[in-house]
Length: 157
Image 1: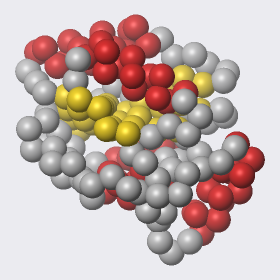
Image 2 (image 1 turned 45 degrees about the vertical axis):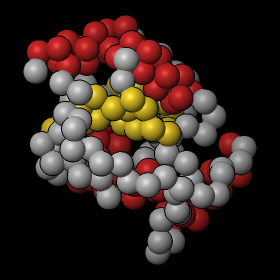
Image 3 (image 1 turned 90 degrees about the horizontal axis):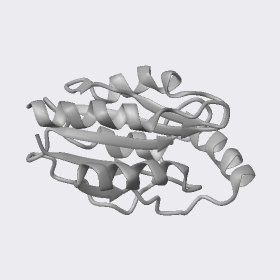
Image 4 (image 1 turned 45 degrees about the horizontal axis):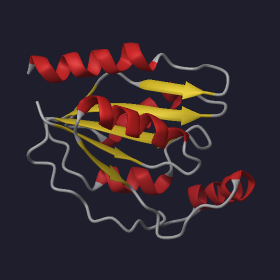
């Protein structure tokens, strides 16, 4: 099974997970880059609140990747206002995830990954979501257990 990591990280917390997963899985990685960078925590929170109400999602600079040759997509994102960042959601909605396995991972301050799963399932309607992983301020996820599950899945198919 061929895997790729697609992620966004503002503060570096999600990026640490993404880079470690890339090292462990020896796979390709794509960082989603917003057209306009997010600032510090407070300014990002204010901006995210406005973006949730806006008609259009913020733009990103990456081209949409051709995922034809991949079976598994590890999708990393921070959790903002109990959801995926809007431009990450828009990016993913433009990817063809038909018959893919999507493995979400997230870093958060207050809300764990479960609060994003309904939205993610709507974005990945033709894919199967497995092994969600999160690590946050109040709960450090067990990365080693998670990556072993993901690696096992990759080697079995």
